Image (cartoon, rainbow, N blue to C red; front, side, top):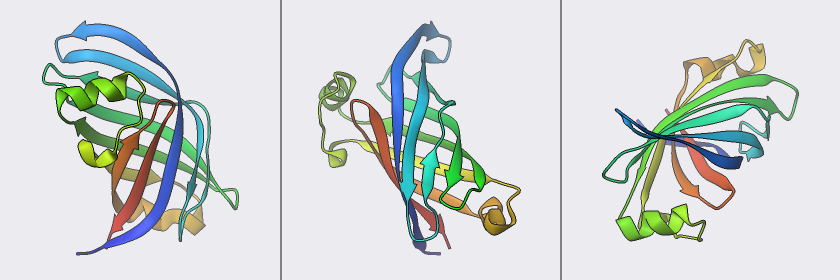
Length: 149
């Protein structure tokens, strides 16, 4: 098995909506308001309307669950679902929460990516698994996605 570069994503986010503590942790909803992706086999824009449904756990770990729609440079529409985790030292997580610039090497942010489309040009994505390493900024999430070949 090897990793092959798929695309670099920049997902622009709206404000955090904090729903409070539940039995699973602190639930947060973050609207995806747009973005871009660019890579050797996949490029285009991230459409507004997606959402990141996060749960912050008592130990500081965030469970990530996103869904959004992509439009490729040549007009295809793709559904993207990511699941993952973000965790790190409490001081680093506090700085991220405060919107500070933090070196992504200071925390762990990994995603599993699944795609879905009916567009014949991109049906190969329906049968492809991808993983990504992410970074959080004040208004966006950036991640490099790689297919598992």
